[in-house]
Image 1: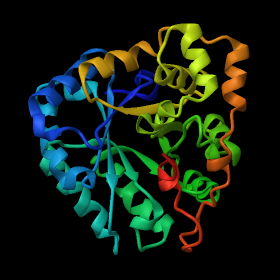
Image 2: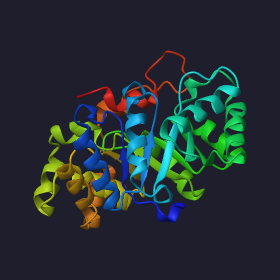
Image 3: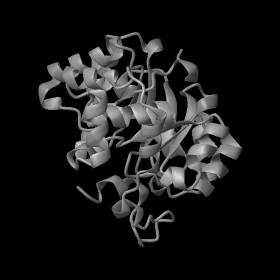
Image 4: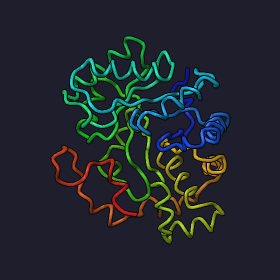
Length: 289
């Protein structure tokens, strides 16, 4: 079984896999796996659950013990039993005996208190249906509360060149200090960051002979010690992503990336308590093109 030290820095994202071309998507997933990418996320929300059945076929042709599978608790948890029922449905559909990490996708998916929710999730650890627990899209206060009681394996949050809120409020440092793997989604903002052609990325791309996305991924993984999920779209995209870790960025250039700020994204009000004022954290990267 894969432990934290064995996890490859780039995870396999499965949101919006091209299921209209299953052969190509299957080849892409297999290429990712064969080239070291050994952790993957799954969710009923992705393609209305269609990708779960697709991934079940993928898991059949690889060594189950050599991939780390994260799955999400989604809408809606109204009582404790809903968590086990939801996980059981995942396991049945993917034809698995267990997942490696069970994650609460966001606090809004549960209508019972967070501690009660994670206590029910922790029962899944005790029953052997998951090895670890993870959380996503929590505020700092709730993250500390959950980790103090249940010792999270990972925390999943938005992080990219423009959206640095989790660093700003201290979550990155907290995760590093408490051996919590920080997993980033929308690390490239679905190519929208590169499409903006920020002068800093244009200059560094030319200097290092790498794409803007490779500059971003290198900085996130090597400097920030974050593991981003990147969708396995095509083999060419995967090759580009993997090559993002094959070079070193000068310290002076790293500082430029560290100091970069987007006033647009910095000015967005995050609705941490689901009050309706502002936006929820997972929508932050989608606010601007």
